[in-house]
Image 1 (cartoon, helix red, strand yellow):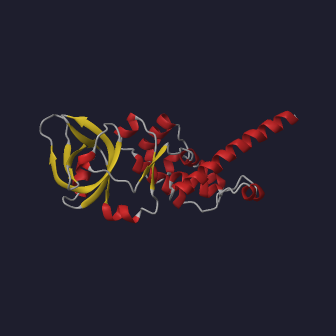
Image 2 (cartoon, helix red, strand yellow):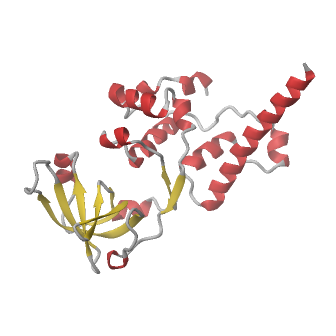
Image 3 (cartoon, one colour):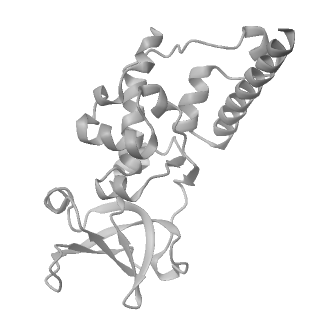
Length: 242
């Protein structure tokens, strides 16, 4: 694979475009495909763990719930347009709120169909709610459970206000891998990789963003940390030789 692929300006990546590219550059200093590949998740969520609405406790925590939307309606109490959904898991109900993309949400959400929602809990008017959750049809969610860990990327208020959420970051990174061969240029020798039981460069980067399990994530983190320390030490040695 040609290495100049990774220095392609982020503007040209499918799903980005001029406006999002400007935000990625100004907010996260992401200018190229390589910058995005090295924008690692800061934590991971266990996709096999689900919460019951009746047992929710901590405000500001992130939760994942299986259930159905039993109602969708527009708010008429404020000047700000809102779409409010009532999500039920059979044991309780929680309010889900959208301020953006309302028309698209209305077209895509089907009442009484099973979904998995993921988002941050808010406490307002003596009840829990989730604003702009990630929403996925349960059937589709189950098909992706081979990757049990969900990567969470850091963001900013400006990015969030433009709908640049975790799902978008996952899609963008996926687009980079789909357009490239599975043979990234290896920067460590085979002997080093074998001696220290290191996975390949490609496997490390892929499993940082899309780990199938904790073991593969740990191997990816170890490989990338080893690589970083290796080149720091190499620079130190070369500097002393001069």
